[in-house]
Image (cartoon, rainbow, N blue to C red):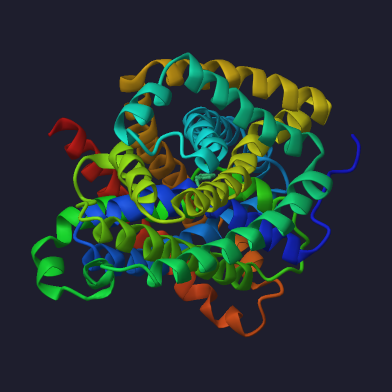
Length: 436
Ligand code: PHE
C-alpha cells in the first residue's frame, strides 16, 4: 500500500479541525437555537457543555484516531478487534454520508444566496423566495454544485487539498465575521438583541434547566463535529508527538469564538428589525435574516459578505464529512483517492438530491436523526476510550502533552463516568421530543 497522506504541520491539522467544527452549526444552527431557548441562558448552558462534555469527548475521538492511524473502520478494528470494530466504524461512515446528504442541500441554499445577494434577488419577498428555492429541482442543482466544490478539494487529498484550503478559508471566515460583528454594532436598535444574548438571566436558566440541556448538548456535539468519525479520521493523519490535549483546547476555543461571533451578528440584527428570532425554526431564521438585509442601506453588500462567509465555513466542514467515507475506501479497499472521491460523491449526489426533493424527510434527517447518530457514535467512542482501552488512551493523551499530562486521569474518569450519562440523557431528550 502506498504511504498514507498526512498533515504537513500540526497547525494545518488544527486549522482543518477548526474548519470542520466551524460551519453551519455555528452560524445557522447556533443563533437559531439560542434565540429559541432563552438567549443568554442557552449560551451559558452551551458554554458549560462545551467545556464539560465537548472538550473531553473530542479528546476521546482524537485519541482513537491517532492511536488507530486509520479511518474509523480500520482504526476500530485494530483497536478493539473484529467484528465490533468494523461494525462501529461502518456506522460512522454511514453517519457521515447521511450528514453530508443534508449538509450539502443547505450548503446549496447558501451558495445560491451568495450568488444572488449582490442583486438582492430575495429582498422583495424573502419568504416566497426561500419557499421556492429550498426544495425541488433547483435545490437539487445547487446541492450538486456545492458537492462539486467540496469533492474538488477532497480529490487532491489531505495535505494538498484539505490542509491547503483550510489554511486560507478558515482565517478568512474569522476576519469576515469580525468585520460583520463590528458592522452590526453600528446599526441602530440593536440594544435589545445584545441584552437578550449577553445579559445573563439566571431565573430563566433555573426554570428551564432541563429543557435547555437537551438541545444545548446536541448542539455541543454537532458544532464540535463529535461522534461522526470525521475528527477521528483527521486525527489519524497526525504525528505521534503532537499534543492532543493542547490541540483540542485550541480547537474548542476557536470554534466557540466563531459561534459566539455569529450570534453577535445574527441576534442583534434580527432584534433591530423587530423580528422575534425564537419563532418558527431554522427556515424562518433564513427568511428573517434575508428580510433584515433587504431593509438595510447597503444590505446587498452586507448580505453577500455574510453568505459568502457562511459558504466558506460550510465548505471546510463539508470536506471533513466527505473525507471520512472517501478515506475509508482508500484505506480499506485500496481504491485510488480520485476514484473514491468520484464514487462517494455520486452516491451523495443521489441521497442529497432525494432529500432536496422531500422536505419532510429532510427535516427528520437534519434534526433528530443526526442528533441520534452523533450521540450513538460518541457513546461508542467514550466506551472504548474510557473502558476498553483506558491504558492506551492515557498513553495517547500524555504523548507530547507536557504539563497538561496532569489532567490525564481526571480526563479519563470524566470520559468513563460523566460523559456517557450526559450523552444518554441528551439521546433520551431527543427521543422524548420526537414522541412529543
Ligand atoms: N461541526 C459542523 C458544523 O457545525 C458539522 C459537522 C458535524 C461536520 C460532524 C462534521 C462532522 O457545521
